[in-house]
Length: 217
Length: 217
DNA sequence: GGGGCGGTCAACCTTTTGGTTGATCCGCAC
DNA sequence: GTGCGGATCAACCAAAAGGTTGACCGCCCC
Image 1 (cartoon, rainbow over the protein chains, first blue to last red):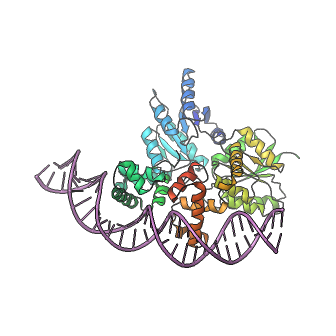
Image 2: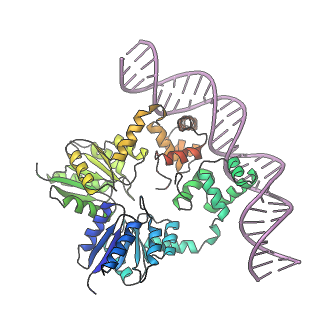
Image 3: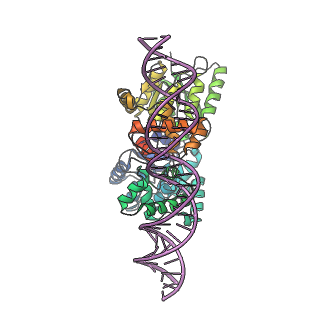
């Protein structure tokens, strides 16, 4: 089938240059186009299609400084006719990121610290319509489906979000029109599920796991 | 003086490949060696020196998955005889990172989302013994010295970082080999400067103002 | 050598938070 | 209709955090 045509999506010029160098070192890949965010990726994809140009794999970062993020872009790409497979290549292996990416239709999830050969193999797998997961990612998914009892309820997540803005129990109670006692009850449940025993580590852990956004967007 | 010899230190093979490609595209730079963490960087530096090989600039990431982190490595390099200038190239522009790097003896602080030309210029400046700061970093430092009464001291920033990881006062005290009383004193000062009155809002505000990185990143 | 500042510590008190037990109400599933 | 889980609330106690006052030391600067 000749060389594989790749669309690189990453907001860092350094990373794009690295992927380009790494993939084209052996000549089974070529870079069809580059984009710095999701919007640009969609534009490039549309442009290439009108040119009759092929894209076999989209290599997509998740964290994009500005513009459309990787998950949204992935979902948008999968809405197209005969969409190319999207392989996520990112820095973080957090639960929420992975779940969101898979739900959006990604066909793989690799980490940037992977050795070049692993990344090349993943691109090949994606192009062949197979899925490719980094070992760490696969392990995390397995451990998660085996322990659903620690999932937070929507109300608990809402509490956690207010907690992270720095509100006291009383302030949270007023905000939600419930009593302080109820807030405390929710917090105890949250701490139990997260395996912590105070609000700051709850915030730290929930931020790490991408259950909530870091304070300040 | 011929081409500049550079030591690349970054835990991501992709990023190293990108920097290599980006810097050697025009032939005023050449890569003397690469390292995936601080320990390896020191080893490479020693090895190159015994070979009589020159290193004009060390290009260093701060967040290194395993091994010695960038700040520690920078400090160690600056302890050497006739140390090469160390240019930090990282993802985050938070006050804590910047202060720590400058204190460790870094001669510049660039962000990975910078355009290639800016990075090349920064490397040239560093090699010439000048300092090179990304515009965002420079702006942050300026705003800091223009309002010194509300500026946090390095020690206070350090406390704030530990605070954000979810540690209790006692745990912070043990970590820093000081008493709990001292921790509380620092916290009162921090709250006063930030205009808050509890630890969670201090974390929220400090994250928003990019004084510290969001927990777990 | 005096003054300011950052960092350290102690004692004391108030407020907030954490943890437990037990209870009511509601919606949904079997 | 019985049972279960989520959400609500109260009372109580223990622990942690917040706030104040005052103190000492080392360092740099004028």
